[in-house]
Length: 207
Image 1 (cartoon, one colour):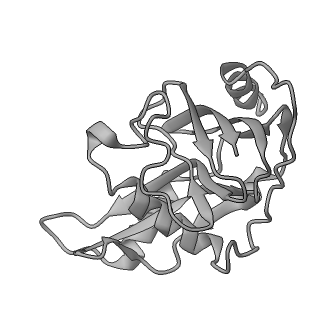
Image 2 (tube, helix red, strand yellow):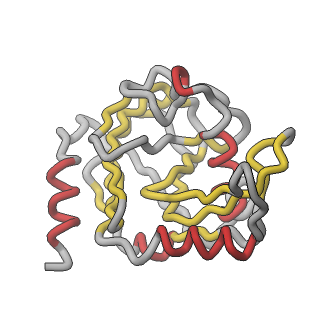
Image 3 (cartoon, one colour):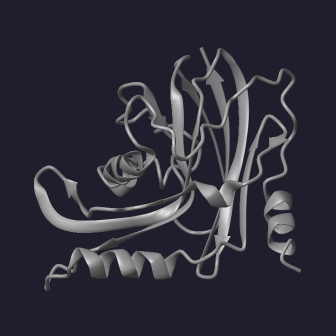
């Protein structure tokens, strides 16, 4: 029965195989990306994801039109979703970028009307992300195993932006893929937690 959620997630994310499969190496979770630890990239992902208004947010995006928003440097973020509805997006990505994105994740934020310690924020985040019922990553038909090892946990709390001193902590499962060669990629990814699920498909044209 433990495998049933993964089967359901795989069915939800079923997609046609691309005509030409490209290699997209999965980077080990302990290996730095562009000289930066992946735990730090998970913080930067949150700062990126929360820097937009709802109407132009890559996380709220239903078709990929905001995929390039706020991207800079060697790492290209992909967005998860708000809610559990399957989301299908397409976008262009420059060749040579390394993708970084969550299979499923949570953030806890200090309340507006009270102080909360970093320890408490990290404990709350950990409770929201217990052992997952399912994690899925599939790139051009190749499914990856061992995704439970890709948990990234905030060691030190962080601010949501340079001009906001509100503390936050994150916990979740993130992957880094690349650097990407030119070609077309179909990515299916997601996860299932007791209180949340996510199912996302991206078609990436890399040139």
